[in-house]
Image 1 (cartoon, rainbow, N blue to C red):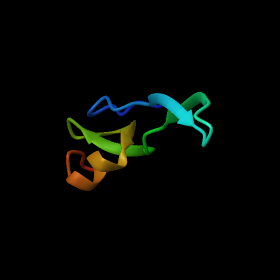
Image 2 (cartoon, rainbow, N blue to C red; image 1 turned 45 degrees about the horizontal axis):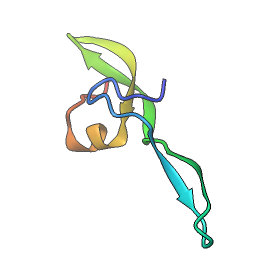
Image 3 (cartoon, rainbow, N blue to C red; image 1 turned 180 degrees about the vertical axis):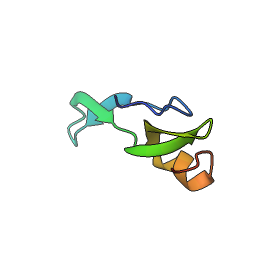
Length: 61
């Protein structure tokens, strides 16, 4: 679910690094919204990231 249907943007993984340099896992989730989108003239519900919405790659229904 946490993946953009337009640009395929998903979660990124890395490390939290404390002051003493101990590392633990960290996850950055992309800002994805459930949106009604026009696809071939019909309305369809998709998961789209906010950067695609803002750039105009997607036309809302």
